[in-house]
Image 1 (cartoon, rainbow, N blue to C red):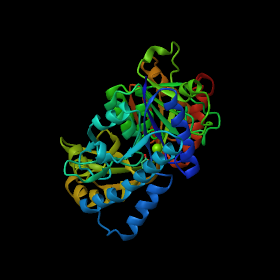
Image 2 (image 1 turned 180 degrees about the vertical axis):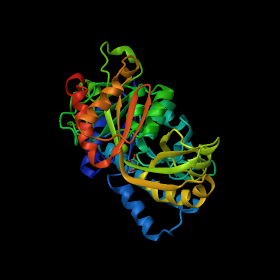
Image 3 (image 1 turned 135 degrees about the vertical axis):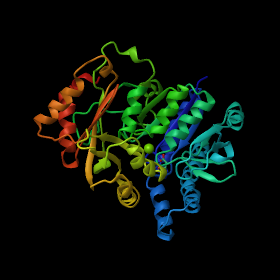
Length: 422
Ligand code: ASP
Ligand code: MG
């Protein structure tokens, strides 16, 4: 008997009718002999609605107290959808029970709005499964050591599901969503984008961190750490589709890199519009300068992405980096007040209209010239590259936002993704 975890996203849980369909699908799996744990998201739009209400009443300043209450509020969305799903399962004649994170319990640290799961107690869930029950567990939420409700960050139900699957040593974790798998790139930008039947865990990790929104990045990290077999598939197939066919659909995240004899060099193109670039011009080029600039930024809990320091002239150099666009204004302020005075920077300039486009593929390890091919494609399109960063299995460039779609389309074509991704 296989232990299977299903995760359903907000769209899949979007209405009573859709919840009924989820219940019918889960019931089908349970009747086929699977032990089932289901982790739903809040109904679509609900988390935004709840946070919107909170915003109307919030003071300007973000304090730890405010963040605590945001979690208190946002966590209710998943509690509602979990209870509804349990009722819908019962209506299908399935014995089902729902639990909030604290009831399981899913223990997290206390970083409200972006808490990390520390441990999951599986005793209660196991007892229910042994008694033949389907267990529904709220996604997105947990509880800290002092009993405060926490949430795992937007999109965090993916992580809840994978963590639950890891804790229970589930045979597979199926992430049901409104797309039918992981694509070579976003099909809304490139009509010829293809669904990948498999993608290696490392590629998925890069894709998620580089802006592909299919899975929350922490869920992929979790899957890698605990080797949770993970599949992304559509919740919009008819619920009564043949179960074996369903179990083979979507995209499987694999851990064996050699499964594909002929690995495509590039597996996918990721992009991210949410970035902003900041340059400090003419800073003193001396030991400690990077720390002087980025230390205060890190202290303010702002994530820095691409970093470039130029060659120096006459003891001075230019230092550029990117941050999330939401952090742009705050970072500029911080630099002007705290950093410019001590680094001797001549000028600080910023640009919030940039984006990052990346090519990803484990095949890049064994092929040379992939990055330069990327640069030549971009130059043929007349796109200026502002920054470059590479790792073993990806190359990213920062370019003007207005060329993003053009760049993605040109790269998708140049790397034969329409053909090779089968
Ligand atoms: N409901 C939460 C959100 O909208 C968590 C999730 O859907 O995964 O971010
Ligand atoms: Mg999601």
